Image: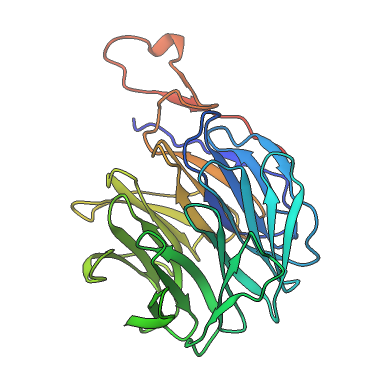
Length: 329
């Protein structure tokens, strides 16, 4: 009998969860931030899902959220026409950056000195966080709303995905686009893995893996439903994706074989990401919950405890029950 995947369910949000991000591994473990249409982004311990705090201050849906590497700062993008920077330890609002329209995406440079934003007004903005009152640098070129914007290539370039069915690479110094990838439909998610020199792009039912330097397509996966988000394991073991049909799909990176598919949410899945150690991945859904899933089912990790029933502890038994409690905010 196969081992059963038992996710940790992280409740607390009251509306759809639309974005999430992990920090790197810190001396205190790693952390997880979630963006939700309830306007209240939450910070959690990454390996357990335990609630740490809620960032209070937005007056509209929060569409994007990120942490810096050591989780000492957070940034959020919201429908109240602002991007905000927060103290990741105290939860205090540090900076509020006004925009002319809904903000969808935020990303810190590696040194935390600059914040990149993108949103409904089709512009990329670069804010100097040491001078938040100064006018940001603006980069235009997209013809529709920007969904995702990421620092790229050691912060020397920027990558952006928009509803105009393109992903564009921009040079930070000249503020001009140097390459454009065109797609048959709008890109739904984009993940950059600098350590693997790879880029993961989801559009329609397709998940494409691209070389980070050339932006050439290396391989692609086809899912049975429209995919909203995809994430690659940090050691390239597998790829996970989720979308319209409420299911999570796991694919073998090398062969493309579907390893697992299971329904754990009660609504479309909007975001999925691997933890920095690759031991789990998190998913956020229209149902208002975050769920944490084990990469290797049956392993004792975080709040998961590997339990062998007494009557099945013989050497020949391969049945393992994995138990996990619900985590509340």
